[in-house]
Image 1 (tube, rainbow, N blue to C red):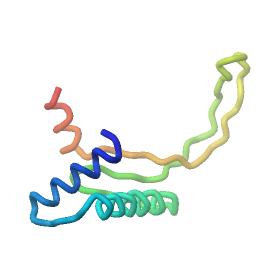
Image 2: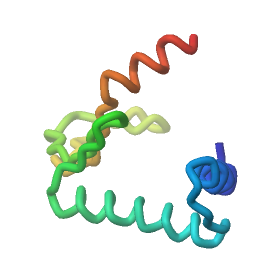
Image 3: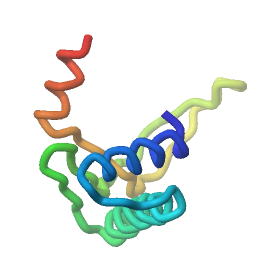
Length: 98
């Protein structure tokens, strides 16, 4: 699903719940949602949505890596990376749609 398709679905779902918004407003809502999550995680906060999952920043330890073109072994430094863990209800829904 593309961003535009998601916006259309959001507008349709809101209309079904008697909330009328246009595509431009839905786009702003979606942008705000993403901005709030990314800025919160970047600031070290944990963001949890009950039926979706949890976003947080995790420290990835330094590790050995390899350049695929040359085969040269390199050392990748430790760094903070974003992590998403799906909620159990989300996992169960995806599993039953198999």
